[in-house]
Image 1 (cartoon, one colour):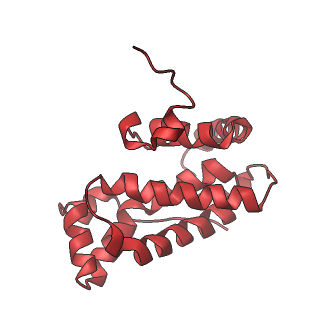
Image 2 (cartoon, helix red, strand yellow):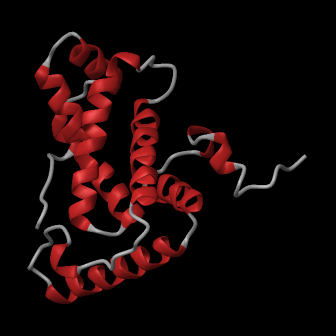
Length: 173
């Protein structure tokens, strides 16, 4: 199915993640929905690149946000909210990959909605996305997580779990 999600993050106001978390913990459904809207596209894209199938990525995105909601009282705020959120997303994706040891191909017909204004540009984007998805599926899971977080989510290596980074970067002394 086709997915068209969320508002532009700039449209979600200037409230920080920490303020939205505090308000969500105090019972504000509006704050919780703003957190979802702020991150749903990024979590979906992360899941899609990790597992390669749009429907399963959408299901995983929903599972991630259910897990975040359940565990929100445990968020201590000693790290950035996106790092905590994507740690949960990475655990969900890893669990999925363990349960489903198969790789499906990226299906152009199930990809997120694109503009029809320029079919040639859409075809180029689809081709590029297919290449990225293929290469990402060939990487070991830990490397796939690191590439996704570093290059697609703009995390620093310090924001990632140390055991992932140590697999990729030799310590320099």
